[in-house]
Length: 472
Image 1 (tube, rainbow, N blue to C red):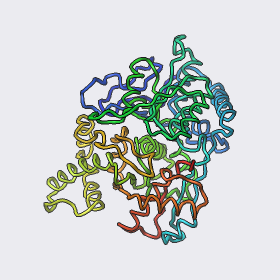
Image 2 (image 1 turned 90 degrees about the horizontal axis):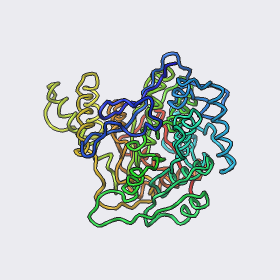
Image 3 (image 1 turned 180 degrees about the vertical axis):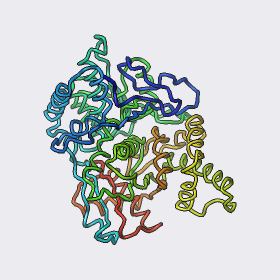
Protein backbone atom coordinates (compact mmCIF):
# COMPACT_ATOMS: atom_id res chain seq x y z
CA UNK A 1 0.00 0.00 0.00
CA UNK A 2 1.50 3.33 -1.04
CA UNK A 3 1.39 6.46 1.12
CA UNK A 4 -0.21 9.78 0.17
CA UNK A 5 2.56 11.61 2.03
CA UNK A 6 6.33 11.74 1.82
CA UNK A 7 8.93 13.65 3.84
CA UNK A 8 11.29 15.87 1.85
CA UNK A 9 13.84 18.42 3.03
CA UNK A 10 12.70 21.88 1.96
CA UNK A 11 16.33 23.02 1.93
CA UNK A 12 18.13 20.41 -0.15
CA UNK A 13 15.41 18.09 -1.49
CA UNK A 14 16.63 14.96 0.31
CA UNK A 15 13.87 12.45 0.99
CA UNK A 16 13.49 10.61 4.28
CA UNK A 17 14.37 6.93 4.33
CA UNK A 18 11.01 5.10 4.52
CA UNK A 19 12.58 2.66 7.01
CA UNK A 20 13.70 5.43 9.38
CA UNK A 21 11.37 5.38 12.42
CA UNK A 22 12.41 8.90 13.43
CA UNK A 23 12.66 10.99 10.21
CA UNK A 24 12.82 14.22 12.13
CA UNK A 25 15.96 15.77 10.66
CA UNK A 26 17.30 15.92 7.12
CA UNK A 27 19.56 12.90 6.46
CA UNK A 28 21.80 15.05 4.22
CA UNK A 29 22.34 17.87 6.73
CA UNK A 30 25.99 18.66 7.39
CA UNK A 31 27.34 21.05 9.98
CA UNK A 32 28.16 24.43 8.45
CA UNK A 33 26.69 23.76 5.00
CA UNK A 34 24.44 26.87 5.34
CA UNK A 35 21.41 25.03 3.97
CA UNK A 36 18.03 25.50 5.64
CA UNK A 37 17.35 21.82 6.32
CA UNK A 38 13.74 21.26 7.43
CA UNK A 39 11.90 18.01 6.75
CA UNK A 40 8.51 18.82 5.23
CA UNK A 41 5.43 16.69 4.68
CA UNK A 42 4.37 16.68 1.04
CA UNK A 43 0.77 15.58 0.52
CA UNK A 44 -0.71 14.03 -2.60
CA UNK A 45 -4.37 15.02 -2.19
CA UNK A 46 -5.75 12.79 -4.94
CA UNK A 47 -8.66 10.76 -3.61
CA UNK A 48 -8.31 11.94 -0.02
CA UNK A 49 -11.23 12.90 2.17
CA UNK A 50 -10.77 16.30 3.82
CA UNK A 51 -12.69 15.59 7.00
CA UNK A 52 -15.00 13.32 8.95
CA UNK A 53 -17.75 15.80 9.78
CA UNK A 54 -19.11 14.10 12.91
CA UNK A 55 -15.78 13.55 14.65
CA UNK A 56 -14.87 16.05 17.43
CA UNK A 57 -11.20 14.97 17.76
CA UNK A 58 -9.16 16.82 15.09
CA UNK A 59 -6.52 14.09 14.89
CA UNK A 60 -9.21 11.63 13.89
CA UNK A 61 -11.38 14.02 11.91
CA UNK A 62 -8.51 15.01 9.57
CA UNK A 63 -6.54 11.77 9.79
CA UNK A 64 -6.30 11.16 6.05
CA UNK A 65 -4.24 14.35 5.72
CA UNK A 66 -1.71 13.37 8.41
CA UNK A 67 1.63 11.72 7.67
CA UNK A 68 1.39 9.52 10.78
CA UNK A 69 -1.85 8.04 9.46
CA UNK A 70 -0.67 7.60 5.89
CA UNK A 71 2.61 6.00 7.02
CA UNK A 72 0.73 3.60 9.30
CA UNK A 73 -1.74 2.64 6.57
CA UNK A 74 1.11 2.02 4.11
CA UNK A 75 2.47 -0.49 6.64
CA UNK A 76 -0.89 -2.29 6.84
CA UNK A 77 -2.25 -0.79 10.05
CA UNK A 78 -6.02 -0.69 9.67
CA UNK A 79 -8.02 2.50 9.90
CA UNK A 80 -9.82 1.07 12.93
CA UNK A 81 -6.55 0.28 14.71
CA UNK A 82 -5.18 3.76 14.05
CA UNK A 83 -8.33 5.43 15.34
CA UNK A 84 -8.30 3.21 18.44
CA UNK A 85 -4.67 4.17 19.09
CA UNK A 86 -5.48 7.89 18.92
CA UNK A 87 -8.57 7.52 21.09
CA UNK A 88 -6.53 5.68 23.71
CA UNK A 89 -3.87 8.42 23.73
CA UNK A 90 -6.52 11.14 23.85
CA UNK A 91 -8.16 9.49 26.85
CA UNK A 92 -4.83 9.34 28.66
CA UNK A 93 -4.22 13.03 27.94
CA UNK A 94 -7.69 13.89 29.27
CA UNK A 95 -7.02 11.86 32.42
CA UNK A 96 -3.84 13.88 33.08
CA UNK A 97 -5.07 17.31 32.00
CA UNK A 98 -8.81 17.16 32.68
CA UNK A 99 -9.63 17.98 29.08
CA UNK A 100 -8.91 16.32 25.75
CA UNK A 101 -8.45 17.40 22.17
CA UNK A 102 -11.57 18.81 20.55
CA UNK A 103 -12.31 21.15 17.65
CA UNK A 104 -11.78 24.66 19.05
CA UNK A 105 -14.03 27.67 18.32
CA UNK A 106 -13.56 29.76 15.19
CA UNK A 107 -16.19 32.43 14.79
CA UNK A 108 -16.81 36.04 13.92
CA UNK A 109 -16.31 38.37 16.86
CA UNK A 110 -19.03 40.96 16.72
CA UNK A 111 -17.23 43.16 19.23
CA UNK A 112 -13.87 43.13 17.43
CA UNK A 113 -15.58 43.62 14.08
CA UNK A 114 -17.38 46.69 15.38
CA UNK A 115 -14.15 47.92 16.95
CA UNK A 116 -12.54 47.94 13.48
CA UNK A 117 -15.62 49.30 11.70
CA UNK A 118 -16.27 46.13 9.68
CA UNK A 119 -19.36 45.69 7.55
CA UNK A 120 -21.74 42.76 7.95
CA UNK A 121 -20.03 40.88 5.13
CA UNK A 122 -16.58 41.36 6.65
CA UNK A 123 -15.17 41.28 10.13
CA UNK A 124 -12.72 39.66 12.49
CA UNK A 125 -12.77 35.91 12.95
CA UNK A 126 -11.07 34.50 16.04
CA UNK A 127 -9.63 31.00 16.41
CA UNK A 128 -9.64 30.44 20.17
CA UNK A 129 -7.04 27.95 21.41
CA UNK A 130 -7.09 29.06 25.06
CA UNK A 131 -9.32 26.13 26.07
CA UNK A 132 -7.16 23.54 24.34
CA UNK A 133 -5.03 20.95 26.14
CA UNK A 134 -2.52 22.75 28.43
CA UNK A 135 -4.16 26.09 27.61
CA UNK A 136 -2.62 26.76 24.19
CA UNK A 137 -2.15 25.50 20.65
CA UNK A 138 1.17 23.88 21.56
CA UNK A 139 -0.47 20.64 22.64
CA UNK A 140 -1.46 20.01 19.03
CA UNK A 141 2.19 19.95 17.95
CA UNK A 142 3.15 17.57 20.74
CA UNK A 143 0.17 15.28 20.21
CA UNK A 144 1.05 14.95 16.54
CA UNK A 145 4.58 13.92 17.51
CA UNK A 146 3.33 11.48 20.15
CA UNK A 147 0.97 9.79 17.70
CA UNK A 148 3.91 9.21 15.37
CA UNK A 149 6.00 7.76 18.21
CA UNK A 150 3.18 5.46 19.28
CA UNK A 151 2.67 4.23 15.71
CA UNK A 152 6.40 3.46 15.55
CA UNK A 153 6.17 1.39 18.71
CA UNK A 154 2.87 -0.30 17.83
CA UNK A 155 4.27 -1.48 14.48
CA UNK A 156 7.65 -2.48 15.96
CA UNK A 157 9.55 0.00 13.80
CA UNK A 158 11.75 0.90 16.77
CA UNK A 159 13.08 -2.69 16.66
CA UNK A 160 12.62 -3.10 20.37
CA UNK A 161 15.00 -0.28 21.33
CA UNK A 162 14.55 1.16 24.85
CA UNK A 163 12.24 4.14 25.08
CA UNK A 164 14.37 7.22 24.43
CA UNK A 165 14.12 10.35 26.54
CA UNK A 166 12.22 13.22 24.96
CA UNK A 167 13.76 16.69 25.05
CA UNK A 168 12.58 20.27 24.52
CA UNK A 169 13.96 23.80 24.96
CA UNK A 170 11.20 26.08 26.28
CA UNK A 171 9.98 27.87 29.38
CA UNK A 172 6.38 28.49 28.40
CA UNK A 173 3.42 26.94 26.60
CA UNK A 174 5.51 24.53 24.53
CA UNK A 175 7.20 23.11 27.62
CA UNK A 176 3.89 22.77 29.45
CA UNK A 177 2.30 21.03 26.48
CA UNK A 178 5.26 18.69 26.09
CA UNK A 179 5.13 17.83 29.80
CA UNK A 180 1.40 17.06 29.73
CA UNK A 181 1.65 14.88 26.62
CA UNK A 182 4.81 13.07 27.80
CA UNK A 183 3.22 12.46 31.20
CA UNK A 184 0.11 11.00 29.55
CA UNK A 185 2.29 8.62 27.53
CA UNK A 186 4.52 7.81 30.53
CA UNK A 187 7.63 8.96 28.64
CA UNK A 188 10.64 10.67 30.26
CA UNK A 189 11.04 14.34 29.30
CA UNK A 190 14.00 16.68 29.69
CA UNK A 191 13.16 20.40 29.59
CA UNK A 192 15.86 23.03 29.12
CA UNK A 193 14.76 26.39 30.54
CA UNK A 194 16.38 29.84 30.84
CA UNK A 195 17.32 31.38 34.15
CA UNK A 196 14.27 33.68 34.08
CA UNK A 197 11.73 30.89 33.63
CA UNK A 198 8.40 31.55 35.31
CA UNK A 199 8.40 29.75 38.69
CA UNK A 200 4.77 28.74 38.17
CA UNK A 201 5.69 27.07 34.87
CA UNK A 202 8.63 25.31 36.51
CA UNK A 203 6.33 23.99 39.25
CA UNK A 204 3.87 22.70 36.67
CA UNK A 205 6.65 20.96 34.75
CA UNK A 206 7.77 19.20 37.93
CA UNK A 207 4.20 18.14 38.66
CA UNK A 208 4.23 16.38 35.30
CA UNK A 209 7.49 14.60 36.21
CA UNK A 210 9.70 16.49 33.75
CA UNK A 211 13.43 16.77 34.44
CA UNK A 212 14.47 20.43 34.32
CA UNK A 213 17.86 21.87 33.39
CA UNK A 214 18.43 25.62 33.78
CA UNK A 215 20.65 27.15 31.10
CA UNK A 216 22.32 30.53 31.71
CA UNK A 217 23.45 32.71 28.82
CA UNK A 218 27.16 32.87 28.12
CA UNK A 219 28.66 36.27 27.36
CA UNK A 220 29.69 36.52 23.73
CA UNK A 221 27.72 33.43 22.64
CA UNK A 222 24.86 34.25 20.26
CA UNK A 223 21.61 32.37 20.34
CA UNK A 224 19.35 30.77 22.91
CA UNK A 225 21.36 28.75 25.47
CA UNK A 226 18.45 26.38 26.02
CA UNK A 227 18.43 25.60 22.31
CA UNK A 228 22.14 24.82 22.26
CA UNK A 229 21.72 22.54 25.27
CA UNK A 230 18.89 20.80 23.43
CA UNK A 231 21.26 20.15 20.54
CA UNK A 232 23.67 18.44 22.93
CA UNK A 233 20.91 16.23 24.30
CA UNK A 234 19.79 15.22 20.82
CA UNK A 235 23.39 14.36 19.99
CA UNK A 236 23.43 12.13 23.06
CA UNK A 237 20.36 10.20 21.90
CA UNK A 238 17.32 12.16 23.08
CA UNK A 239 14.40 12.54 20.69
CA UNK A 240 13.48 16.15 19.81
CA UNK A 241 10.01 16.67 21.30
CA UNK A 242 10.04 20.26 20.21
CA UNK A 243 8.45 22.83 17.92
CA UNK A 244 11.64 23.82 16.08
CA UNK A 245 11.13 22.47 12.55
CA UNK A 246 14.84 22.20 11.89
CA UNK A 247 15.05 19.61 14.68
CA UNK A 248 11.76 17.86 14.08
CA UNK A 249 9.95 18.49 10.82
CA UNK A 250 6.93 16.55 12.07
CA UNK A 251 6.29 19.27 14.67
CA UNK A 252 3.97 20.99 12.20
CA UNK A 253 1.88 17.83 11.72
CA UNK A 254 -0.46 18.43 14.65
CA UNK A 255 -0.42 22.18 14.14
CA UNK A 256 -1.85 21.78 10.65
CA UNK A 257 -5.16 20.78 12.22
CA UNK A 258 -5.64 24.46 13.14
CA UNK A 259 -5.61 25.35 9.46
CA UNK A 260 -7.94 22.47 8.64
CA UNK A 261 -10.40 23.58 11.32
CA UNK A 262 -10.32 27.17 10.07
CA UNK A 263 -11.37 25.92 6.64
CA UNK A 264 -14.13 23.69 8.03
CA UNK A 265 -15.49 26.48 10.24
CA UNK A 266 -15.18 29.37 7.78
CA UNK A 267 -18.30 31.26 6.70
CA UNK A 268 -20.33 30.16 3.68
CA UNK A 269 -18.27 30.42 0.53
CA UNK A 270 -15.10 29.83 2.49
CA UNK A 271 -13.65 33.28 1.78
CA UNK A 272 -10.93 34.45 4.12
CA UNK A 273 -9.04 37.53 2.99
CA UNK A 274 -6.24 37.82 5.55
CA UNK A 275 -4.65 35.70 8.25
CA UNK A 276 -2.57 37.50 10.85
CA UNK A 277 -0.44 35.17 12.95
CA UNK A 278 2.16 35.82 15.64
CA UNK A 279 5.62 34.32 15.18
CA UNK A 280 8.30 33.17 17.59
CA UNK A 281 10.01 30.02 16.38
CA UNK A 282 7.66 29.85 13.38
CA UNK A 283 6.00 26.46 13.88
CA UNK A 284 2.51 27.91 14.39
CA UNK A 285 2.58 30.04 11.24
CA UNK A 286 4.25 27.30 9.21
CA UNK A 287 1.66 24.77 10.36
CA UNK A 288 -1.38 26.90 9.65
CA UNK A 289 -0.08 27.98 6.24
CA UNK A 290 0.60 24.36 5.29
CA UNK A 291 -2.82 23.27 6.55
CA UNK A 292 -4.51 25.92 4.42
CA UNK A 293 -2.32 24.97 1.45
CA UNK A 294 -3.40 21.33 1.82
CA UNK A 295 -7.02 22.47 1.77
CA UNK A 296 -6.39 24.37 -1.48
CA UNK A 297 -4.71 21.32 -3.00
CA UNK A 298 -7.62 19.07 -2.12
CA UNK A 299 -10.14 21.58 -3.47
CA UNK A 300 -11.69 22.48 -0.13
CA UNK A 301 -10.42 26.08 -0.21
CA UNK A 302 -10.27 28.29 -3.29
CA UNK A 303 -7.10 30.19 -2.42
CA UNK A 304 -4.81 31.09 0.45
CA UNK A 305 -5.60 34.29 2.35
CA UNK A 306 -3.02 37.06 2.45
CA UNK A 307 -0.57 36.08 5.20
CA UNK A 308 0.80 38.61 7.69
CA UNK A 309 3.08 37.77 10.60
CA UNK A 310 3.60 39.64 13.87
CA UNK A 311 6.76 40.20 15.92
CA UNK A 312 7.73 42.77 18.53
CA UNK A 313 9.78 45.89 17.87
CA UNK A 314 12.37 44.49 20.29
CA UNK A 315 13.07 41.23 18.43
CA UNK A 316 12.16 40.52 14.82
CA UNK A 317 14.45 37.96 13.14
CA UNK A 318 11.69 36.94 10.73
CA UNK A 319 11.01 40.51 9.65
CA UNK A 320 14.74 41.02 9.07
CA UNK A 321 14.98 37.85 6.95
CA UNK A 322 11.85 38.70 4.95
CA UNK A 323 13.15 42.21 4.28
CA UNK A 324 16.45 40.96 2.91
CA UNK A 325 14.81 38.43 0.62
CA UNK A 326 11.96 40.70 -0.45
CA UNK A 327 14.40 43.46 -1.38
CA UNK A 328 16.33 41.01 -3.58
CA UNK A 329 13.14 39.88 -5.31
CA UNK A 330 11.76 43.39 -5.75
CA UNK A 331 15.03 44.57 -7.29
CA UNK A 332 15.01 41.70 -9.79
CA UNK A 333 11.35 42.24 -10.67
CA UNK A 334 12.05 45.92 -11.28
CA UNK A 335 15.01 45.15 -13.54
CA UNK A 336 13.39 42.33 -15.49
CA UNK A 337 10.00 44.02 -15.90
CA UNK A 338 11.43 47.38 -16.87
CA UNK A 339 9.69 49.09 -13.97
CA UNK A 340 10.99 52.50 -12.82
CA UNK A 341 14.11 52.24 -10.71
CA UNK A 342 14.15 52.88 -6.99
CA UNK A 343 12.90 50.92 -3.97
CA UNK A 344 9.16 50.53 -3.32
CA UNK A 345 7.68 53.19 -1.08
CA UNK A 346 6.32 50.81 1.55
CA UNK A 347 5.53 47.25 2.55
CA UNK A 348 2.33 47.04 0.51
CA UNK A 349 4.00 48.43 -2.60
CA UNK A 350 6.90 45.99 -2.27
CA UNK A 351 4.53 43.06 -1.79
CA UNK A 352 2.52 44.08 -4.85
CA UNK A 353 5.69 44.43 -6.92
CA UNK A 354 6.80 40.95 -5.84
CA UNK A 355 3.41 39.62 -6.90
CA UNK A 356 4.32 40.67 -10.45
CA UNK A 357 7.12 38.11 -10.40
CA UNK A 358 5.10 35.38 -8.70
CA UNK A 359 3.97 33.91 -12.03
CA UNK A 360 7.59 33.58 -13.20
CA UNK A 361 10.44 31.37 -11.93
CA UNK A 362 12.00 34.45 -10.33
CA UNK A 363 10.49 34.13 -6.84
CA UNK A 364 11.20 30.40 -6.67
CA UNK A 365 14.80 31.02 -7.74
CA UNK A 366 15.27 33.53 -4.93
CA UNK A 367 13.65 31.21 -2.40
CA UNK A 368 16.05 28.49 -3.50
CA UNK A 369 18.95 30.87 -3.04
CA UNK A 370 17.77 31.71 0.48
CA UNK A 371 17.36 28.02 1.32
CA UNK A 372 21.01 27.40 0.48
CA UNK A 373 22.41 30.62 2.02
CA UNK A 374 20.63 30.61 5.37
CA UNK A 375 23.16 32.74 7.24
CA UNK A 376 22.54 35.69 4.89
CA UNK A 377 18.93 35.85 6.07
CA UNK A 378 18.48 34.18 9.44
CA UNK A 379 20.73 34.37 12.49
CA UNK A 380 20.17 34.72 16.26
CA UNK A 381 19.01 38.06 17.64
CA UNK A 382 22.01 39.91 18.99
CA UNK A 383 20.65 40.91 22.41
CA UNK A 384 18.34 39.18 24.84
CA UNK A 385 14.91 40.74 24.15
CA UNK A 386 12.15 41.70 26.58
CA UNK A 387 8.40 41.95 25.94
CA UNK A 388 5.04 41.35 27.56
CA UNK A 389 4.55 38.91 24.65
CA UNK A 390 7.46 36.77 25.86
CA UNK A 391 6.25 33.71 23.96
CA UNK A 392 7.32 35.19 20.61
CA UNK A 393 10.83 36.20 21.62
CA UNK A 394 12.69 33.26 20.10
CA UNK A 395 16.27 34.15 19.20
CA UNK A 396 15.66 32.72 15.74
CA UNK A 397 12.62 31.92 13.63
CA UNK A 398 13.51 28.31 12.96
CA UNK A 399 10.75 27.70 10.40
CA UNK A 400 11.37 31.07 8.76
CA UNK A 401 11.60 30.09 5.11
CA UNK A 402 8.22 28.35 4.94
CA UNK A 403 6.60 31.38 6.57
CA UNK A 404 8.35 33.85 4.27
CA UNK A 405 7.23 31.76 1.29
CA UNK A 406 3.64 32.02 2.51
CA UNK A 407 3.84 35.81 2.68
CA UNK A 408 5.55 36.16 -0.69
CA UNK A 409 3.04 33.89 -2.42
CA UNK A 410 -0.01 35.66 -1.00
CA UNK A 411 1.06 39.31 -1.11
CA UNK A 412 1.41 39.61 2.65
CA UNK A 413 4.23 41.05 4.72
CA UNK A 414 5.43 40.99 8.35
CA UNK A 415 4.19 43.46 10.94
CA UNK A 416 6.12 44.90 13.90
CA UNK A 417 4.21 45.97 17.01
CA UNK A 418 5.16 48.11 19.99
CA UNK A 419 4.72 47.18 23.63
CA UNK A 420 1.97 49.78 23.80
CA UNK A 421 -0.06 48.10 21.06
CA UNK A 422 0.57 44.65 22.56
CA UNK A 423 -0.95 45.83 25.85
CA UNK A 424 -3.82 47.62 24.12
CA UNK A 425 -4.65 44.58 22.02
CA UNK A 426 -4.73 42.34 25.08
CA UNK A 427 -7.05 44.73 26.91
CA UNK A 428 -9.34 44.92 23.88
CA UNK A 429 -9.28 41.14 23.38
CA UNK A 430 -10.21 40.30 26.95
CA UNK A 431 -12.76 43.12 27.33
CA UNK A 432 -14.53 42.74 24.01
CA UNK A 433 -14.46 38.95 23.54
CA UNK A 434 -14.40 37.73 27.14
CA UNK A 435 -11.55 35.34 26.30
CA UNK A 436 -8.88 35.30 29.02
CA UNK A 437 -6.00 35.35 26.55
CA UNK A 438 -2.44 36.34 27.45
CA UNK A 439 -0.29 38.98 25.73
CA UNK A 440 1.48 36.43 23.52
CA UNK A 441 -1.82 34.85 22.60
CA UNK A 442 -3.39 38.16 21.55
CA UNK A 443 -0.36 39.52 19.68
CA UNK A 444 -1.96 38.61 16.36
CA UNK A 445 -4.69 41.10 17.22
CA UNK A 446 -1.98 43.66 17.98
CA UNK A 447 -0.74 43.14 14.44
CA UNK A 448 -4.26 43.62 13.10
CA UNK A 449 -4.64 46.90 15.00
CA UNK A 450 -1.30 48.13 13.67
CA UNK A 451 -2.18 47.09 10.11
CA UNK A 452 -5.59 48.76 10.28
CA UNK A 453 -4.08 52.04 11.47
CA UNK A 454 -1.21 51.98 9.03
CA UNK A 455 -2.66 50.57 5.81
CA UNK A 456 -6.36 50.58 6.41
CA UNK A 457 -8.66 47.61 5.89
CA UNK A 458 -11.74 47.43 3.72
CA UNK A 459 -14.94 47.10 5.82
CA UNK A 460 -15.80 44.04 3.72
CA UNK A 461 -12.58 42.15 4.44
CA UNK A 462 -12.73 38.92 6.41
CA UNK A 463 -9.68 38.77 8.65
CA UNK A 464 -8.62 35.99 11.00
CA UNK A 465 -6.49 36.15 14.14
CA UNK A 466 -5.48 33.39 16.55
CA UNK A 467 -5.84 33.57 20.33
CA UNK A 468 -3.19 31.04 21.14
CA UNK A 469 -2.69 30.94 24.91
CA UNK A 470 -4.60 31.45 28.13
CA UNK A 471 -3.48 34.02 30.71
CA UNK A 472 -1.82 32.27 33.66
